Amino acid sequence: MTEVLTCISPIDGSVFATRDTLSADAAFDAVARARTAQADWAARPLQERIDLVLAGVAAVGAMNDDIVPELARMMGRPVRYGGEFGGFEERATHMANIAAEALADIEVGEDATFKRLIKRVPHGVVFVVAPWNYPYMTAINTVAPALIAGNAVMLKHATQTLLVGERMAQAFHGAGIPADLFQNLFLSHDTTNTLIAGNAFDFVNFTGSVGGGQAMERAAAGTFTGVGTELGGKDPGYVMEDADLDAAVDTLIDGAMFNSGQCCCGIERIYVHDSLYDDFVAKAIETVRGYRLGNPLDPDTTIGPMANLRFATEVRAQIAEAVADGATAHIAPFAEDDGGAYLTPQILTGVTHDMRVMRDESFGPVVGIMKVSSDDEAIALMNDSDFGLTASLWTRDLDRAMAVGDRIETGTVFMNRADYLDPGLCWTGCKNTGRGGGLSVIGFHNLTRPKSYHLKKVTG
Image (tube, rainbow, N blue to C red):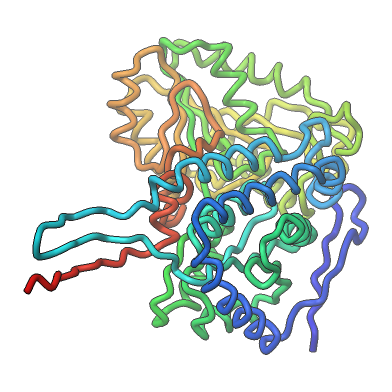
C-alpha cells in the first residue's frame, strides 16, 4: 500500500502538500538507473561537471522569489530573511573552486621503473537524507561536491519541507544534469531502511536526529556502506571577562533565537563570566522582548512559528520543567503565543545541568544562561554534554581562545562569532552529534575513495 507524505503548514495547521511514496521495487529501479548514469557522468571532464552543477545552483537562485514564501509556508521561517540562496550558492561555489586541488592525484613517485599515485574516485551512488530546518543549504553541502566528484545522487528530503527536493531536481535537470543521475525520491522510513540494508547505495549522508542517525547505522550494519551523520547539538557560548559585551549579546542571542531556534549549530547554553553576567542577562532580555512573533509571510515578523506543533510542545515542556525546578523565565508570554506552534522566545536563568533544558537538545527559541568564574569552570560545563557540534568563545585574546578551544569537545570552535558554516572548514562533530565531515577538502575526501596505482614499466 502506498504511503502518503503530508506537509502540515505551521502557519495555520493546514495541509500544504502531499506526495505518494515509491514502492521498494520502484525505488530500487531508480537506484539502478542512477548507477548506470553515474558511469557516464564520472567519465566527463571535471570542469564540465563543475559547470553543470553551478548552472543548477544558479537555476535554484532564479526560483528564489517562489522559494522564500514556500519555505515560510512549509517550515515557518519569516520571509524578511530572504531564504537560503546566499549560503546555498556560497557553499556550492567554494566546493567548485577547490575541486581540482581536492580531487587531484597524489603523486607518490616516478622513476625509470615505477609510477605510483593515488587517485580519488567517486563512491558511485550517494544517498543524501536532508533535514527541514535549512533544507536547501544542508542538502547542497553534499549534493554539490558529490556530483562534482563524479557520483550519482539520490536525495530524500524531510516531509516538513516536502517540495525542496523537487525544486532542486527541476533546477538541476533544467541546467543539463541528467535526470537519472540526480533524483529526488519520496520514500517511507521502511523503504529507506530496505534500500540501505539492501546495499543500494555506496555512501549515505544523513542530517537529522540522533534516533534517525542510529536508524541509518542499523540499516547499514554489515553492508560496509559508509554512513556520515550530523545529528543533535547543544551548542554552548562562553563570554569571558574581556569580551565585547554588546557584540556577544547580539550574536549569541541571535544564534539562540534565529529561525525560531531551529538551527543545527544554534546556541542553546550560555556561560558568562560573573563580572559581565548581570549586564549580559539584562541586554539579552531587552533584545528578546523586542522580537515580533507572527505569521512568517508578514515582512514585519522577526520570529515565526516553530515548524511543527510537536517541536513546540517539547520546548514548552523543557521550559516548564526548568521553572518548576527553580529556574526563572524572563520573557512574559507574547500575545501571539497560541499554545501551539507560535511560541514565545524564552531566556532562563537559575538553570543547572540537572535540568533537561541544559542537557537535551531543545531546537527551539529558548536559552539558559549560567554564571561562571573561570575558564576551567566554563570548560567543564561546556563539555558536560552528550553533543559536540560548535562552541562560541567571546574574548579579545586569540591565544586564550585557542587554548580554551583545544580543551572543548566539539567539532568547530568559534571566536567572537557563532552559528555560521564556513565552507572552507570541515563541518563535523563529535559524541552524539555524529561522525564524518562535510565541505572543505575533507568533504571531497569523504565523498570519494582512494585508489592506488602501482605501475611497473617495461624497460627491456
